[in-house]
Length: 117
Image (cartoon, rainbow, N blue to C red):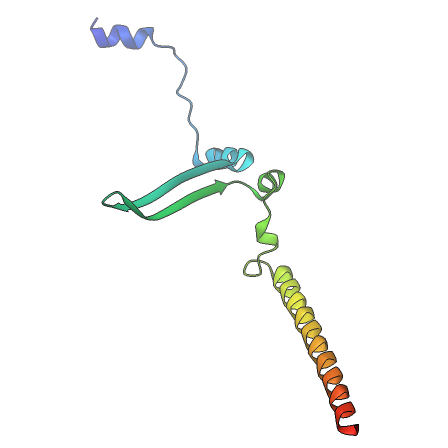
């Protein structure tokens, strides 16, 4: 009996556990995973650029539990958010126009008073 034979006979006789990619992905999406890193570019001990990277990988439900839902309010990613953003901008512009028209009518009214004198 060789050394290798004695080692293999002493090893447990259960098959090695295999985890497929789908199981790993399911676990990651269920629990979530955070990957963080910083990139710094220095020249002669002077910091020129710092880039901070933060990556959170999870399912939508896990992200919502963590309080992350920016995709619902980003007009580039959500048609509802884009519509809301346009409606809000439209309302702000209407308010500005009304304010200008109010200023113009007051200015025109005071101008008329000046001409009457």
